[in-house]
Image (cartoon, rainbow, N blue to C red; front, side, top):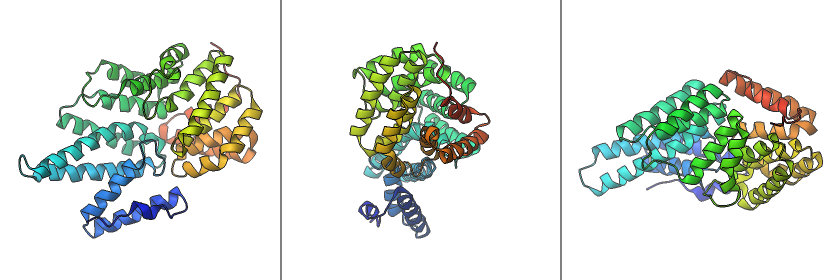
Length: 341
């Protein structure tokens, strides 16, 4: 029987304390060879609320997913044929394979994950998908998403082509998630017209899922700004802010990017007002995400010299790992009027 109690975490003050508690309890369970408790902790860390949850760092979630996958795989291999245990372990294993496509693509957002760690996660996912005869389509999509987060245009284009060419299967994303990824990609490579075109059914509410339109707002609205569609961008941003506000704390990590957009629209008062309204909630939600903290610092930088200096330092750390100046350039662009195409 598991000794883990998720309710006990509610008494802790913040996400950093919750992460530390789950790590300590997981390590204790491993030392005691208590697989039931370790299983409960790993499952909670990965699945708490939903995939957009920022309670835990992506690296810690990846560690838990790797352990859980190995646990289910071992049980599946060693269980009697056609037994209830075999069915349960296979179901758990397939659920883990589904989670890989969610976590591997966003792993570079964790600054503590090295390039080697990131590559190892991709290879693990690829090996598992091959073992169970799944298409490489989601592996290539994850690689594209990693390239976008790491500011590598050439790699993003290469993996985009492979993703689009690969066969679809049961691991494929829903239409809303697929479309969101396309919007993100075209925004990243600077094809703003295509990004806006693809985002339209999402912005109109015709396509949605658990994370869409939430994640689509930034690339879609920034594309409108880059195209000089100021009125449409302003209207969409107003709608986005209300939507994220009503979506709850799990999606508050998106707000810093929306605040950046208000500043890009040259409405400094709007951006500053949003910071006043949401600052404390944002800080609480993003404690275990250096990437989201960077986006917060970039949003604050135009108004605070200390935030600007901190943003420069953190952007440099990401860029040193990634081998470019992508985030330092993103920060610089906050102080440069958008180019109209």
